[in-house]
Image (cartoon, rainbow, N blue to C red; front, side, top):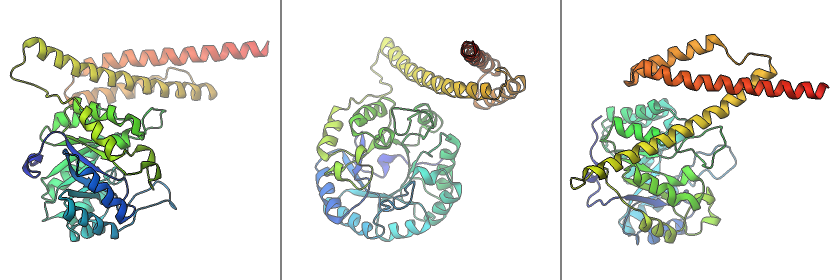
Length: 368
């Protein structure tokens, strides 16, 4: 993809780039109060606020609409901050451009729909306004990549990826599970694509935002987007995940910034750095296995209720074929992938078999 480095369109940029502002623009007073507080934090370069809020269910606050764009324009004029808001369709784009919004972002619920992304891309042709794209709700790297490609084909080369975590049916400590391996893979494939982290939506909890911000710096992301509100407890949307401007300043000061490589490092330092990267990926692999075995347990329970055997050969053959094809596509030896899968599948069958034995033993006791 043809992507312009972020420091080419944001002058005098220091790392990390910090984007701050409320989840939702509620009133003009709230927007201006927040903006005047965050502009005092040196690293904050962009002010964010949701004008149109795509909510999961109706009859909840869905944003103030067009009037909020006037408030953002005032923020821009009085503070000098760049301003950004979310757009979900061509009409939103038209209104945002009319009010001189500097940067647009596409939310997770929109990224998941190629029709909506294409509509926005078509509306942006000829503008080259910067566009930030959040990962889709589901863990689908191809969908995320496709959104960038659609923008690039429309002539947009000022692009930024926003990692905001992924929805999952599994129980988790996160509002949206980070699945760091996915943004890391996106960076591996497209190192020219700037990436920032949205810890607010990943955690859903202001107390854990600092931890995720540091993790984002550790995997060499360029910045963070943190939802910031003068009185988070009274926020009209996502109150639990917003921080005060003072807290934001403390979070930024606490960050330990690292670089992936340095010409001055010795061999041992380089080796330690690379091993730490492997450790992070290994942790993600283990977390993925834990989530897989949670599902294995549910499948085993379903099989018991329907008197189905733990081992189903046709299913195993299908999965081996899929694993082999996928491995070849991403550049892994198919034999290596099969060997790993066989171990995982064998453990899954053992797990389900033990579940069934335990179930039958308990049933036998109850009948006695």
